Image 1 (cartoon, rainbow, N blue to C red):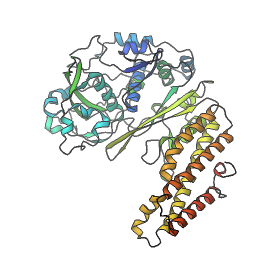
Image 2 (image 1 turned 135 degrees about the vertical axis):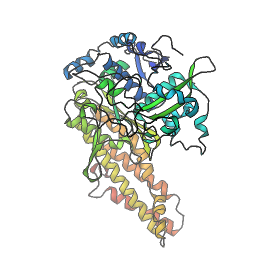
Image 3 (image 1 turned 90 degrees about the vertical axis):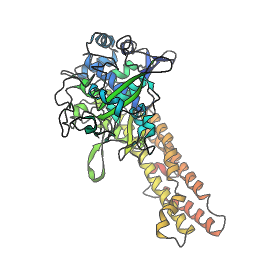
Length: 518
């Protein structure tokens, strides 16, 4: 089954900048009209990021990228046309057909003979739907034959290559007569960290502007574009040899942005309307990358974890992304990694940029949810933004601790003879921390917007502290409503409220949180 025109096997869903109509465009038209299109949208944040990754890989493969930081600045400010990428795609001899029998786009044709026997329904292709393969005890959902549109399957495959997490595959290599290890699925390039994409936020910004912003200057050969598993690349596994797979280092940014992180086979099917779809999928281990050098981690943000160990910032089940924004602003303010993304965008004076973060939250081999947030930035406001983010986070951390201590006070009075095992649940009954954290996010983003716009940082923090103080008091009061109206309940309520007020005005409390500042 072949698409017409030949390069239309890949169809990102795009939104035009003029009338906000949703259009389906093939790859050449995507680049030709990049400065007419406002943005590219996927069905999930991860899909959006994965499509952007692939488009960046095409820019490098077409040799349409800047080689130095100075060239990059001109590339962005002069809005260098992306037409040559479209022309390169149309002339490239590689196969762009998702269902080609010899070189299927993004897939491993060696797995095709095993699709009918060992493949499952297309649900397995979508990271968000599969979980740990145990949503239903007998895996029946994985075998549901309902096909999905081919363009949706292609975008889901891009997500698998970029974000899929390490786990055990459902099919053993021995069952398919493959000597290589097929079952152990490695963690892919972006699965364990946050991907930060610079989004242009100035008037008239387009998809073209976004792509240029995130194109890293590269002075050498960009390496190969990974179109299919059949390409001959050094160290790429071929499943012909037993034993562990060998990690490899990408040969350049074209290679990096299109690494085939999974070995995938898709079976074509016709949808009810006669268009192309996919009804069966087989997924196994893919390429494994060696630890990446700094030049391949242009957007990565480091933070100090337990024991003072520095690690790449990743999604957390315990901390919303806005609570980590100080690390982002520190990356822009310090600029100690040389010519990384943050150092480059700091040179674009007068341009408002949003730092869009996306990551896949997973625990014990099970995807949980996509986490995403957006943080404003204007060159020249690095220090105030960093100060606002750090101080705002400290204000919330202190308020959370105060709420816990106030809840503990209420618990001591309401439960005078408690069982030790019940303490945690009893304190949780009166602890307004969850409500405070949930409500603080909007106030925090207002704070960042005010500082980005040039408002006095101290005044903006006073407003923020006042809002967090009121939010904390309300969060505790809402939790204390459940107390009885008797003497004990009244005493617990009044004492807890009094302790919270004293803690918020304590000498060790952040100054912006105190009543005088409010």
